[in-house]
Image (cartoon, rainbow over all chains, first blue to last red; front, top):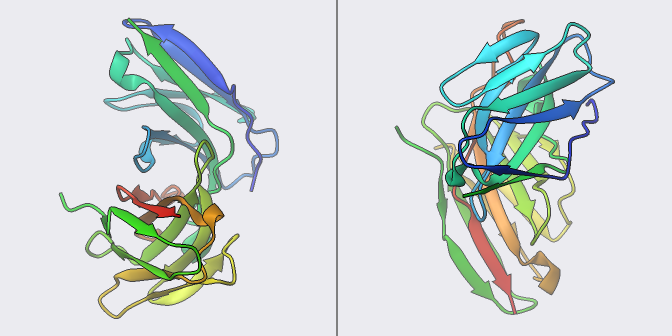
Amino acid sequence: LAKTTQPISMDSYEGQEVNITCSHNNIATNDYITWYQQFPSQGPRFIIQGYKTKVTNEVASLFIPADRKSSTLSLPRVSLSDTAVYYCLVVKDYGGATNKLIFGTGTLLAVQP
Amino acid sequence: AAGVIQSPRHLIKEKRETATLKCYPIPRHDTVYWYQQGPGQDPQFLISFYEKMQSDKGSIPDRFSAQQFSDYHSELNMSSLELGDSALYFCASSLQLYTQGSGANVLTFGAGSRLTVL
């Protein structure tokens, strides 16, 4: 599994766009980039997944450059309720029964009024 | 939509006692995962089951055991509890994907069971 590196913490204000970058230099051809969000004392929650270029859903956008060695999670107009830990994970395509998630150190996003 | 159900939500035990946590996955999900998250730490993978068979094993202590039953619910059994076992225990479930290019499995996590060992 490719190792990921992301900032330990970030600060933002309500209404701003937040971009969290993750590096995964050893990503393999059949790996997907997946982001999870975790609020205190709650289970992680899937946000978005992508393979290349750009993916957008109702919550976030994920930008992946052509070399796929990094990715950026973009949260538009954050609110106080977006304060959470964000995990970037590299997960194998249709990995089968052994496709567990290995969590590294996530990014604690603190949104202030 | 139905989510992953965990019970109990809170559990307090004494050292050397035994605890059992239960997990009911999302209907039709075929894989269950258990994670342990200590205070201020990231979730650590313990063990997983696919179609009622153990499929992968992580940093699960020998004092812990788990199984998945015929109705797909899973139980995590913890014996000889230690203070360091105090943590949030998450269960997650997923449906395995078998088509190339279909993406990586998405795990749905339960709300967790908080175990406190005194």
